[in-house]
Image (cartoon, rainbow, N blue to C red):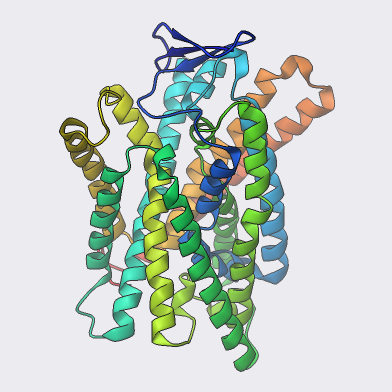
Length: 445
């Protein structure tokens, strides 16, 4: 195979000889590509799906939907998300080019305007996901503090600020996505700690508690909006919005290996999330907190361990979702030369990544409404990136190879998820407006 490297859209490629059979063009990047096994990439995906966000799904998905719609919705979202992500993965080498960025793939299929629009959508998606991660990390820190001192001195905005500093320090020390390696092992361990503890304590509380109320709370009107918002949370739970960037790290053959990683994510990877989500709702019913560890009862040291694990795992998971922005900045300003730990590159990461996460942290502290962020992110970016674009790009790229029924299927998906995106955005904005009236900026909630 002969591999050509080019810049994001227009620069001439350079050639790197791999073997004698195929030529694939690869855009220039300051980060490493084609280094990781499908198993490592599978763990990257699983780290995202079992991040500390899972501690919120009992309250943000199951409470608004109830048992029947909640269970059915999670299973359906799993299947639909696997299908949509598989479509994107199969387009990775479309046209003899390796599309290592989502915007590169959209630009190749649609042109320059789509390239810019996709980058804007992806930036908003990842910015809001990272803002939510910092809120989660802050909640974990505050939960630890409250276990020992409930004097309201250390408020949530302070905890969010501390979390932002720690996330920035980690981002500065880890130059690119492939460099996570051993940290993925730590991430998996931390995920198991808080998931097992949350599951076990919820089971204990559920067995000891009287019967719970599982009715969907709120008025008829509010239930409509919260149900639509929960549907956005369903797709948010399973999708990264950066699949081509993750696929860029996998070794050849990139399509087969990425599909293996996706099958791992959507089979073994979803089981811990299912377990803690369903157990939390079973134990506490419609009173389940949007941060499950605030609902559980148990020894202080056990709850402390769970919250600390959630905080540490969040720091690692955020780095994954911030990596497309880091890659863009590192490539644009040519940070591929020299050691990643050289003074020049290290000072660049301190300024640029530190500045980016400072803005994230400020937004997180000002608007710490986690469930609302999940709903809005799912509505305005996850739906378009993962479902609308995936189906339409596949339709355009493979139009000469698809039957009429297959084309109709993809158009049905585009229209349905387009409608869901608009409806979910309206519902999420309404929730943010309502919460903003209830709480002040930099609220201690």
